[in-house]
Image 1 (tube, rainbow, N blue to C red):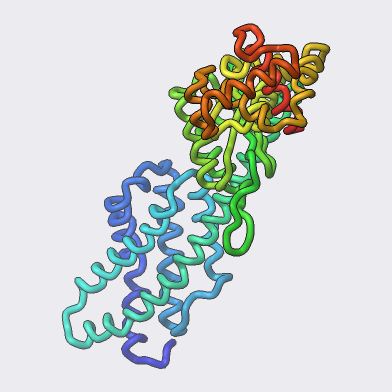
Image 2 (image 1 turned 180 degrees about the vertical axis):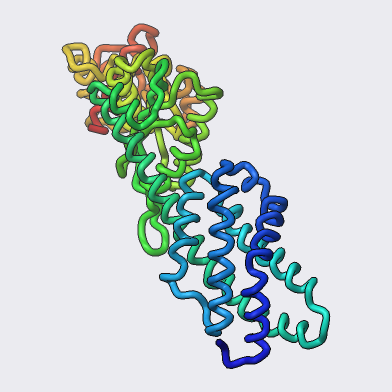
Amino acid sequence: MSDSPVLDEFSEYFRSSLPAIARVMIVGVLDAVPDYRALPDDLVGEELPRATEANLRLFLRSVQEQRVPRQDELAELIAIAVRRARAGMALDTVLSVYHQGAAVAWNAIASAARTPEQREQLLAAVPFILGYLGAVTPGVAAAYVRERQDLHWEQREAKRAVAQALLQGNPVELLAERFGIALDGGFHVLVFRLAAEPDDEPGGVRPVLRIAQTEVDALSPRALSVLERGGGTVLLPTAESDAAAKLSGFVTRLSANAGARTVAGLATAASVADVATGAAEAAELALLARQLRRPTGIYRMSELALQYQLARPGPARAWLLGLLAPLLAHPHLLEALRALIAHDYNRQEAAASLVLHRNTLNYRLGRIATITGYDPGRPDHAQLFAAALTMRDLADAD
């Protein structure tokens, strides 16, 4: 027994009334917490009464011994929290049960107090109720969070394993079935690359992998991914609603949160068998966008088809690079050529962008024609110079 006669009387009343208090608590919890009413009948009829009485007995022991519960005494309550976590019940719901239950039990006991002595017993027990809740709820919450993290990690690893198999072109049906991952239909294949190191923050570089994983989790429960420090690949089922908007938002948020320009290539795989091919195409589009210093965004074949083809090795690529070779020793001529192309061959605008007189620009363009034998003022030659500059940019980025 305790060193306090007042607490001894309270403990004795509590012990003798424990079954009745437990019944009142269960009714009160089921009434106040709707999620608990959705539990299977066997849990409501067996586990909930057992857990409630165990909870009350542990509280009674803490009052009698005038101490908070020890960690080993919380094992049963923690095991219940773990089961709730596995069932997907929200943490606030799990914790609210303890506070709702304490309120119902307190009201039940308080309603029986008739004399000043009995009310004094209630007041003397208040610190133990607060101490009990202060010990139980953090322990239950910590166990719940650990379990959810473990479950989340398992789900992520399962999705990563399936995505890896798809990207490598390996058989994946049995693996997907084992993890309960649907592979019906095709996939949008997004390969993204951070085009620069993230901005430094106090204490070091931003945690890019964690940022990327958070954004993948927010993208869709059906998204599969393989991530690395400089980028990664995301597979989003084509059946996903608003897929284009979701992927665009993903890249925009990732760039903002990572503090780095982020470019992505996007291809579509009509079936599981096409994912590896789609990923190769998307990866090359992302590489091209990065090499060409394109702004943050998603790039498709329709937007980079010419650059994609120009990047292929062959005699045409070598010839185009050779077209600019005589100009490499004359940076001001290359600058004039770039300005002309950038301003859609409008010489007035090109000259203004370089802060030059139009005659000066014309002179430089004439020098280009003399040195190379190709006139940037001719439409057919202008196309060759535009392609050659693209080749030059790609070569410089290699």
